[in-house]
Image (tube, rainbow, N blue to C red; front, side, top):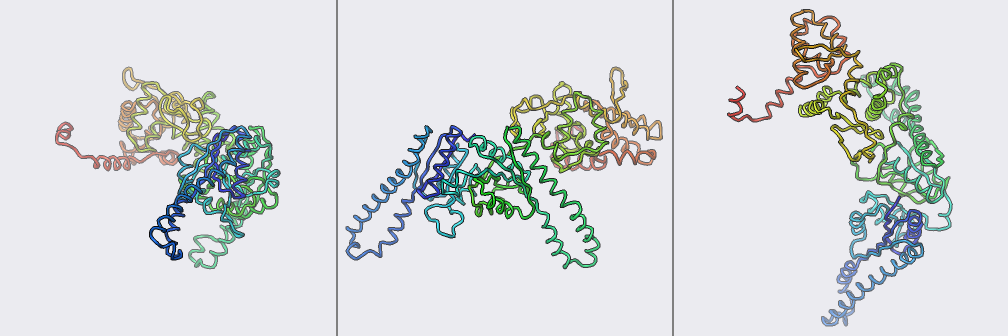
Length: 578
């Protein structure tokens, strides 16, 4: 798992224990180790010069002062290098006894700056360092060098809190799970460590049902009568008590069940614990009671932004206060959709019936797409509306409307004419991309190309067929046009026969020019309404509008006019246009 382990050393008790732990991990994973000691020769030189005015008078003679400076420079530089060698010799000997490759490094400079720069440039995938160093005092919680390295380096970092080897012989591995990709990566690390070190592993999750009580108690005293009526304070409080609190418990329980299934797939037995209260406080109490060997958590949690650079608040509190070793993970892992969805997604009867209409050979692909869309949008129940919205991603005309990019529509049309794949879906995380053989590796979950399922032109037409079936007719000699049943029903809402033929001709011409295989409601409705006018449409038109998602024609024209105004036309271009 870990191929290269990096250990900063300073001869403190915590540093020496970090060496032992790194060697143990290296032996378990066959890793190579690097030991680094940073010394501050320039700082000593600077301080010596500052103190020169305090020397006795006999040392202030210029000749004597220069001699003292040379002696000091030589002793400090050479002495600190010898000390660094001695520190690193201890680690080198232990690595040799374990049969592990070892690299010795030392450098002059500011301790945390050198470590941050060197670890970032290194290919190490785990840093093991003591929670405290040589400057620790009774009230110290976390060393300044360790804290700065943890904040500035996003790699996996194991902070050694137990300096007593006897305490380290016992204790389980505890993984904090909150449903974030960071926490699931921590779970994967915990499972690997459990297998390699033969230690039991547990997962713990915490939800906070008490926060809203404090919020409501604070709000009730400041709301005026008008605000109280709008906010509907009593109803909101009752909603939280009866529904939201229970829902939070179910959400975090589902995260633990997902963790248990992932552990079972790895052949590891995982015990799970759900706690309620303030997150870091409950985990801290749990750690003090259970006395684990290692506490694993992500640098950030489920409520953090994707580009968050600092530590999450719960992580920071536990890093300082946890009584055991702490491993902060910098990676992410996305559980397979099937595993995740089984715990958190349910389907309405109407949605299940809708899925039965999908051809069997397409059903697994469509289901993956739907689950991915539902999870991204935060849905836990798949309805017919969710299916409609999700399928819009894979319908070329809908995709063009959604992205508002003309080039995409043209690209899809080109793919259709060449009988190439329109969309590929990652079967693990649901990531989608267009084009034939579009990826070598999924950028989200790192799955290989063989885990991508291709959606061809046939798939798109199968999805379109869900609008009641497809009817074909020869609109021009040798030219066949396909209409969905719902789109044809929309056309029949035009009461005037002449205007109906005119609207039909316009829609078909547009579809032919864009090489759109099937005319759906999303394509037809705005063009029909623009062509004939709202007053020429029947009573069923409003129902069609309510059940169909599309961009109104007036809005499309306004958008096109805005886009056109952003371009400058040369005289030659204008003359050619005329």
